[in-house]
Length: 194
Image 1 (cartoon, one colour):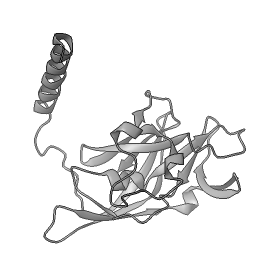
Image 2 (image 1 turned 180 degrees about the vertical axis):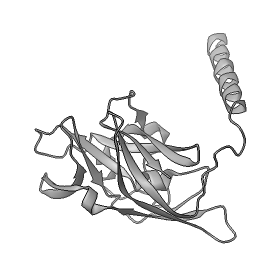
Image 3 (image 1 turned 60 degrees about the vertical axis):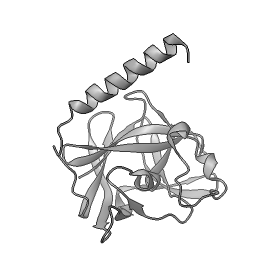
């Protein structure tokens, strides 16, 4: 490794360690049991409940089973690319739910929320667009914040789900398949579970 790369890696690791040291242990821990409200937060600061996430700890395990139940009354039907989607319409951008199409474990741990994130996939389109563009996919990266799970939008290409994954126990969108959007880039700017 060159000296320049080594110095960059040292600064990066030091910054991560310092950042982790500032997070109080146990502060605002999320309770992974029972029913929690799923709320969509929009770029203008407004929010809307869109469903419920039910959590149930798995006995003798660090895992927690979850179920997502969207409130279909809070969503509107859109017929895009020969398929019906449940969407959150807005003048700025239409955001549509894209159900994960394959069997999955339905379990998370407090340290790995990947399957929950994969059960809350979306795509966005401009109001004037007629079709669904699966490369405009959105997944939300969740972190514990103040007793809630807060998800920030990341870009994904939902076309990667056109065929079943080789390993159905491994979520298909890992860190290399995701990229955070700039703040305010998406109308649906945050998901909150609380």
